[in-house]
Each structure stands twice: as structure tokens, then as C-alpha cells.
Image 1 (cartoon, rainbow, N blue to C red):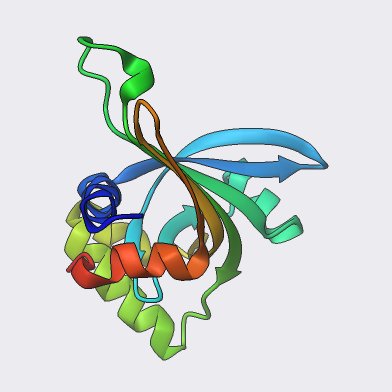
Image 2: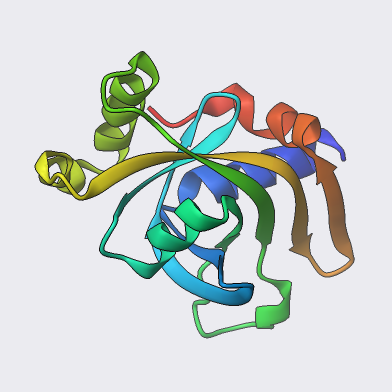
Length: 160
């Protein structure tokens, strides 16, 4: 993937705050909307409640998929919208760990309205570690990426 495509991928992922999270519910697909923040590695952070179905699914089966997509403005061909689907492994961060403290700080910096949710005992911070990804940058611009290739595209400009 050329540097121009890497920059477009990074701009897409860093420019959005919500994604579709695909989990497994007893082997059946389940998709929900989550907020996310790009973290070091790179990985993605999500802050979710145990009361949510997707959180219970992640606890049972930590393999998931995260889809980040360019918003549809209602004009042009929607099939040309940029998007990336990442297959991930979910890891719940221990509240006492340094990783949790750093992740919480990064999450609140990007999504300040979520700060109060960190006081709720049913919420947990998860790191979604990419295993591979499929990036569609537009018509005839499709790339399969390893975790290392995704890191190379995203690392230069992490979220605050």
C-alpha cells in the first residue's frame, strides 16, 4: 500500500468516533454500534457496559470485528465510501493496571462526554487488538492488511 493510501486509511480511522462492532452470540453474528479510540500498538479502545449484549458476547468469545466507515452524505456512489473492517481479539483491561489508566486518559481526551461513565461499576475498558484488516479506499482500491501493515498506517498520528 502506497503512502497516500496509508494516509487516507489513517485519516478515516482517526477521523471517526463510532464503529460497528461484530460479535458472536452463541455462534451467531451480532452487530452493534460502539464508540472507539485508537490506542498504541495500534489497537482500539472501547468502553462498554456489562449490561450490553456485545460486552457479554466479548466475554464469552473475544474474537470480534470492527467496521469503521466514511459517513454517507447522501450524494455520490455509496459503494465508493472508504471503510475498514478489522478482525480483532478483545482484552478487558484491569482497572488497576497502568494500561487501563493510560487508556482511560486517551479515551476521555477523545470522547470527553464519556468521562462520567468511568465511574459506573458495570463499564469496562477493552482493548481490541487487530489481527488483520480489509481496507476499501474507494472504487478498485482494496487492500488486505496484516496487523503490522495496519500499524504502519496508523501509528504516525495516534489520537490524543
